[in-house]
Image (cartoon, rainbow, N blue to C red):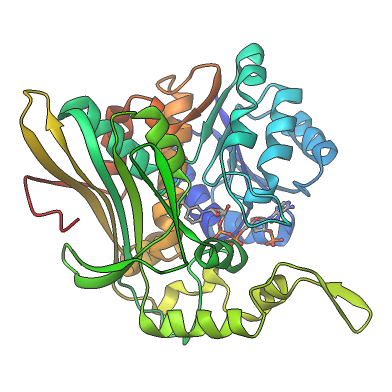
Length: 398
Ligand code: NDP
């Protein structure tokens, strides 16, 4: 018997819950807990299975988490709350002997800065406790790392150039909305860009470097270089990499809105006093922007996310390789009531937990996804709604 605890009842949490419920042979019992219990109840009701229970928790409090873990005794927790809660949830896991998985690395609330050091620092404690922590198991980070590991395992003697390309060619009909938590999303996009080359990190201005890339079944889209957390672990785990970059598409309309939001100070995370109350402008903005959970109904088009890799194959010949998935917003909505960005994050999170519960990704310590065997994971993705495709020796455009 295995029990999973899902923390967070947003767009991603909804997809994780649906996908776990679709696999009752692995996830015998499901607990959904979040700050607002009514949101967990709504998810449980939409799924309509009797092996799901709900609860409430403030995941900023280790004490509350410990009480929750002791009450439900899960085998693994899937953390799809916000990156601010990663460390408190990891602390509670250590205290109660629970395994851990998340989709985004820790960020302090008062600084838009993400790096793995805070979570990697838990390695020894997880090792000693005999517990597994799987970090960054969404799509990117997540599948992007697994794709890279798959390329290294099966095709490359050495990976030299890695470009992760993330295109959302969907249209939700709103003037401006973010596809996942607006606060986290805007913090990510408005910070400086960064990429890795010849052993060094090179910083750029936000959206300084961009290029038109062609995406399968979508066509050309302007793609912007930005920093993404999986670059940090991938260059560490694949030391032959000479250059690693991350690209994401944005439409002109989106970028114009973003510029205005920044220019008028609404992207700021510095608290200000408003009518005697301290507020954070970006958190206030989140409250007035469309809820990403509610974008799904009118969302059309596809996402396309993949890895474009150049290097030397196992026989010593040059090789280019492109591995990607396209995901339809309409199909994701039909299946789970959520759009493709939540779907492409939630399916890998469920899959990672499945790998752990089946004993395939189970080793004491703290690991990024590329440190596990990619084959069984990719096999499950093919069957769970995120099939992947490969192009050998094509033009990578990069
Ligand atoms: P949402 O904002 O839609 O949902 C977050 C959920 O977490 C909400 O239910 C929220 O509760 C809950 N929550 C927030 N703070 C706490 C707290 N202190 N205690 C308990 N619950 C809390 O976000 P998304 O679903 O869009 O994203 C979830 C995560 O997935 C984020 O960490 C995001 O960075 C990550 N992500 C990863 C991607 C990847 O590919 N790796 C891509 C997209 C997202 P309430 O409803 O009460 O506010």
